[in-house]
Image: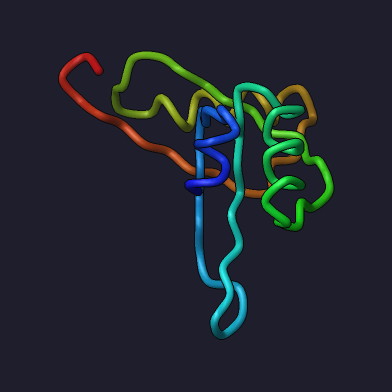
Length: 91
């Protein structure tokens, strides 16, 4: 992560989890994809294939995630995974 920071990469979202013993997989949503690729290559890090992601930002409340997913389902968009986070107190 230090090499990506040094490369000026800013993330909108990041998930990291173990993938194999002694290894981790990181799912990253950078503000600038080209900057991420450039910094990762410079650091000798492997970058997987580009994927599509939705970033939804708004006010929290009961059912907000369900409402967003219902809209995607109505548009026939299949969702493979969901991460939902709330900072609370208007943040």
